Length: 256
Image (cartoon, rainbow, N blue to C red; front, side, top):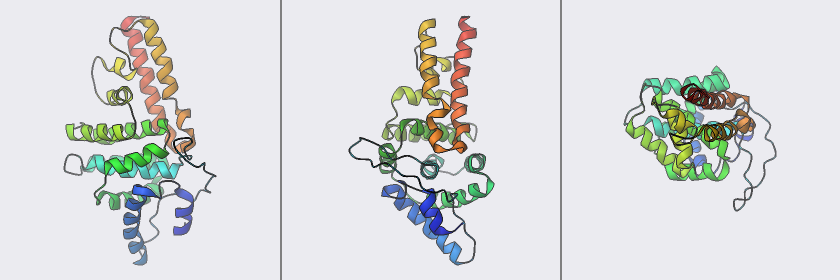
């Protein structure tokens, strides 16, 4: 696939603003590699760009495509992986594996080349996240946070530094505290996690638990991110499954 087709087909709003600047620097090293005969190492699948709506004054967001989400993941993942002062190979392997699961081995390898270029840069969490918040819908931003916790947990434990970085980014992304704690609880073991996942207090009534489950099942339903493409359905289905498990746990515990 040619360079021009990738630029025109894989990316939309993400090829502008702070993220675009980061991509530009990373692509510079890739273009140099291509010039030296190291191949066409680019992400994307040359999809025809769909017509996008114009975002003005918070009225309407442009449609977030798979390529936009893909690049957003790469940029935010680079921040999490460097949060504890080192790049753990297990975390890097997790990023590569997740991209392989979503996009296939070849595209994942291309994405990882871009990721290496991004991870060498100093990234402004605030600027990047504010761009994503402005342009990306809420369900997709929740999916980003879920993915970032998965990266942090890839080495077996989420460190305080990693959690702090994700929490800061969640705030900039416009994710409220209850949604953040719900996703966070999916990656920790605690007797109260089921309540946290469902965003209710311990001691909630059966009716409150049922109501909360219906609300969360709707919020985390995979169809909420169907516009990102089938490749992102697995991650969404994982969140949905964890909501179901939280509800089933309380059903058994409270016997209703």
